[in-house]
Length: 150
Image (tube, rainbow, N blue to C red):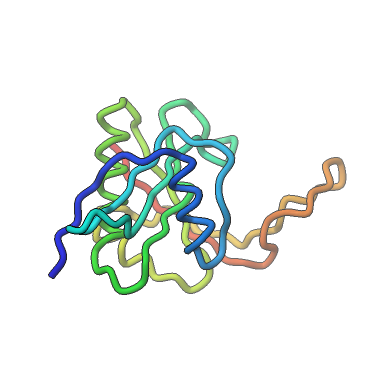
């Protein structure tokens, strides 16, 4: 069994890991901080990137969002470890809430193991609006919001 440790990582390095390994999303533009899980050999096996909430109504300066978590396949507990470490770091910085989202049929097992609670579910209607055209989002995708709160 491999022992994992959580360490800080630059946003550039975390984004490079996401670009190489994430199955659905690419790198993020900005972040508050990023952390990595390393194995005993010092190899990065997962990253978490935490930033401002994407949903502007959640952006109250006391809420942060895990915008990306990416772990290599076959590394047990890495995602849960990163989620838990992200919440502890956020609490220590004064955040009162941390949110993240799952999509589609993802079960949220790592989130539950890290102490998160499912708080909302909705069908994505995309980002396009008559007054503000955007080619973004994933219309029709079910999303579940998960939260940690102090």
